[in-house]
Length: 280
Image 1: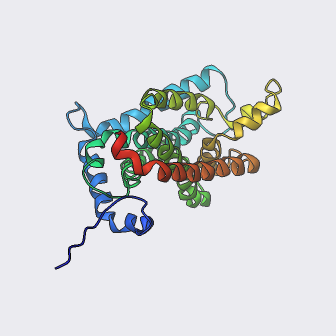
Image 2 (image 1 turned 90 degrees about the horizontal axis):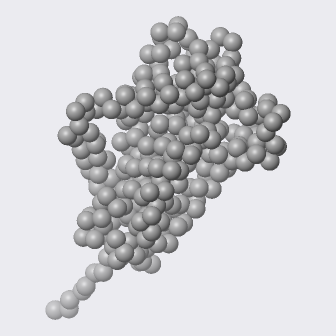
Image 3 (image 1 turned 45 degrees about the vertical axis):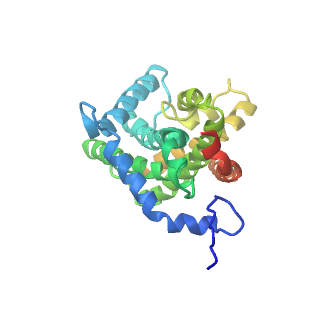
C-alpha cells in the first residue's frame, strides 16, 4: 500500500492562500473572541477602559485645542469637534498597535500548526471595532447633551471607518512582519502612535493648517499625505453635518496612501510569512 505524505507550508504553489483565509474563518473568530475575553482580564475596572481611554484622549485634546486657540465652527462645541476626531483616531491607533504586536504575542501558535498567518493581525481589528462601537455611543451621547442633530451625511460614516480600517490593517501587517525579524519595532510602534497623534487633526482642524500663512506649501502637502487626515476630516464632516470642510485633495491623497499601505503591507507580509516560524 502506498503512503502519501502531505506537507503543509504557507504560500506553496499547490495551496490557495486566499481560499485558506476563508477555510480558516473559524480560527479567525476564535482568536477574535479570545482577545475580547482576555483584553481587560485582571484589570481593576475591566471593560470600562474602552470608555476611559477615549475620554482621557478627548479631554487632553480639547484642552490643547483651547490652549492654542484652534479654529472652531461657530455653532459647534469644541468638545464635540474633538470627540468626532478622537473616535477614528482611537480606533486607528489601537488597531495599528494591536496588529503590529500580534505575531509576537501569538508566537507559540505560529510554531505549531499551519494556517494563513494574516488571520492573526486581522483578528485584532475585530476587538478594536467593538471598542469603536462603545466610543461611538459616547460621542452620540455628547451630541444628545449638546442637542446636536446630524444630517444625512451620517450615513457615509461607515465609508470613512472602512478607510481607517484599511490604513490600520495595511500599516499593522507591515510592522507585524518587520517586528518578527527586528524586535526593535516593539519600541518604535508607541513612538509612531504618539507622533501620529500630534500630526493628525485631533486637537486642531485641517483648516488651521491649510489657512496658515506661516506653514510652507510643501509642509501642507506632506500633512495631507497622512492617511488619518482624510479619515478625521470625513468623520467630522459626517457627524457635524458638514460644518467642517472635507477637502477633496486631502481626502484623495489620504485615501491613496491608505490603499498603498494596504498593498505594501500585504505584499511584504506574504513575502516574509514563510519564515515566521523559523525566526520567531
